[in-house]
Length: 407
Image 1 (cartoon, one colour):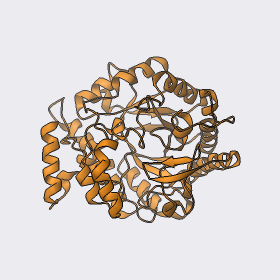
Image 2: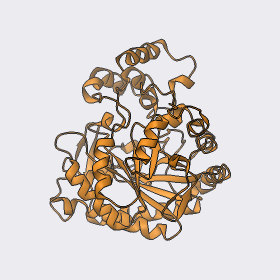
Image 3: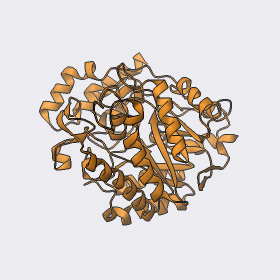
Image 4: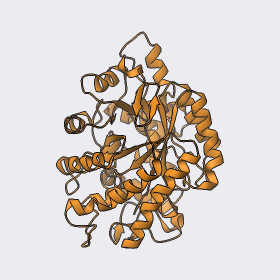
C-alpha cells in the first residue's frame, strides 16, 4: 500500500505518491489559463492524485512555442490562484513546470527570431535560429528565478524545471545542438554551465517553503545525442545543486519525439487540426519518416531508471508507462522509487488514482489504449482522449482502429 501513503518532497508533503505529469494540455488561451485548464486539473485533484502539474509554462516571451501555452507572468496570477486554490481544496498539491523552448518556436509567437544554444536551422519548426549571447544567458537564468517567485505568488507548492526533451537547457547539454566554442560549449562540464545558472536562480527563489524538482533525460534517444553515462553525470550535478527531486525521462522533441511518449504518431489526426496548409500537407507527406514510432510497453523507462536509482540518493520520480496498479506498486516497491508520474492515464481517467484505491482488483488498469490521438492534436487543440470525443472524422476513426490492430 506504499502507493497511498503520504510522502515528503522537500518542504511539502503529498497525501500519496502519485503525481500528474507535466504533459502539455494545450488548454491555455493567449498564453493564459482558461476555465478548461482549471476544470481539468481540479478533476485530477478530486480524482485522488497527490499532486497535479500544470504543464510547460514559459518563463519569458522567447520561451513560448504556442499561444495555448502558459506564459508565467504576474498578469495571470489571479487566474492561476483560482486553480491552485481549487486543487488545495480537493486535498492535492499544485505544481507547475517551467522552461524555455529554445529553438522550437516561430517569430510569430515570440516576436523575434527564435534563440538556441547555437545559430542554425531547426527543421522541426521549421525556422532559422539565433545563438544566444552570454549576457542573454544570464538574463534567461534570472527569468527562471522570476518564474519561481511568480509561481509562489500564484499558490503553487512545487516547481518543476524542464531540463530535458530537447528544450533550451537540454539544447545546451546535448552535443547534437551545442557546438559553441566558449565556456558554454565543448566538454560536458562546460555544457552544464547554463543548467547550473538556471538551477541556482530557481533554488534561490524557491527558498525553504517550495519544492523544486527537475525533469532530465536519461538518454536523448538517437545517435549523436546524450547517452546514459553522460546523462548520469548530469543527474549527479543536479543532485549536488540541492533540488528536492528528479523526474527521469528521455527523448528529444525535435529529433526523437516518440522516444518520449512511445507508440505510433497518428499522422492523419495530427495534420487534420493544422491550420497552415503547407504544414498540413508537408507533414502528411514526410511525417512518417520524421516521426518514427517507438514500441510501447508498460514501464518503458524502467530499465534505464534503475541505473539512476542505484547511483542517486535524492527522491526520484518515475515516469513512463505507468498504466496500472501493479506497475505503480512495482516502481515504488521493489524498484525503490519515491513517486510515480502519470500523464495519459490521467487524461483518459482523471479519477484513475481513486479507481486504483477503491478497486477490488490490485492490478486495476486504466482504459487508455495508447493510440496517441491525444498527442497528435495537442499542438493544435487541447489535449483530449479520443474516447471522450464525439463525432470524430471518419478518417481519424479509421486511423485509430488501424493503430489499435498494430499495437
